[in-house]
Length: 532
Image (cartoon, rainbow, N blue to C red; front, side):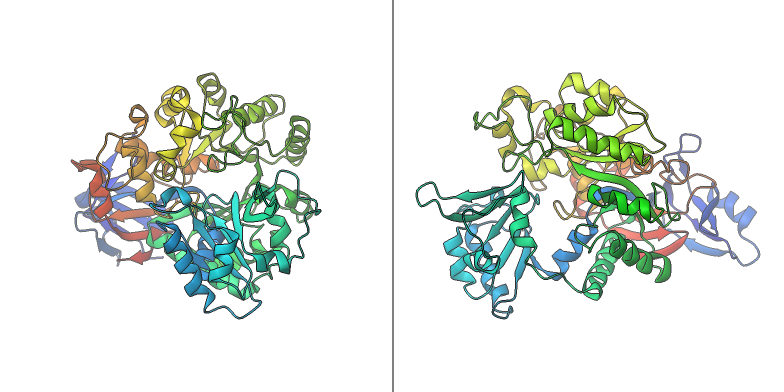
């Protein structure tokens, strides 16, 4: 096979042995050699090698998103996308326009709303949703996927009755005076509705997922760790879809699949395990939830919420049940990927992990949003990695300060503290909760503020350097799946995954230049999968 030489670049390898080079030689999807333009062309530039001039552009190891939901990105493409809506009136107008395209009795499904972004108005009421979409049932996920809005037609379609048993951990929010549903559902109460929403066809889901993959590659991503079975029809359907798109159609994007706990037994029956698959598509960890989110005060805290002392959050399992769940996962020799937002949720999880044997692959502590100092050292463990989402700072501030109070704010998104203590960390977006754009994640890690703001940053002492932020989305992502010997740095023998940028991230005088930086090229397996 012909060798390809990517040359004349500012190539930051993130490999301490040879941190900056001008050229990378690839063959059969692997990095054969790295070095200067002159050396690589002299040694490898004969016999018909393919020479690609990078024109002085910056290059890093291929970007990795360590936690997202490609299915959610696909649904945002297929359904009503309410991400970034700035007011109640704007939200209602978008619903009204979408409803015009929906036949009577057919479902209007959407996601991405966030009342904390509203400059006017609050969460729409059920009456307001009835007004803009009177003929069709409405189901709208909040951006965090922990709260949902419905209209009266939805209640009618699911034959809701006040005496219905709400799934454990869920709440149907009622008007305090009329005792009737307000249209807001929390956590697992959504199951009252979702079982009545017709599933999309396999081909519809496949088409949406394909577009989501292509969008990810356009954003410079070469690998993603994605959690989807609950949304793509289960384990078999999910794996089949990814296998078709990646291994048969050659979409390119490497995908590590987090599998929800309810599919654990089925996974075992299929002979699947962590690492099952190939270098393009692999089974990852088993995903569970330990708590909820800050937005609706369902993240489990060790002390009451500052802005509502009557609440401390919700545990998804009592401690005895959580132990049984994690133990069952361990009995299948599987690593754990556990959603933990609050400090008490993190403590509960660590208490159990400390009692059980380790497995070959690292346990992933997803989000680790509020971390007390006494918990930090318990995360300093080679078999554990904190899976953090820097853009949460943008999505959650300033209102999250009121949730936890000034006394606990320094525990929020404490990335420098984690890295400084030696905690392994990987960077992700949790898309579609936050944008599927690693450059925005890097910007948030470095500035800790919303693009366009000029303050020093929220909880500014926890800012990361540009190098630390880039490592989250490269080196860290490789460690999360025990692939640090295959990817994460530009090193001889590793996978030939590279990301090329229009600007040099490491020579920027102002990190806001990131916002004008574009992905010039995404290279996976040595092949250009996207070029501007």
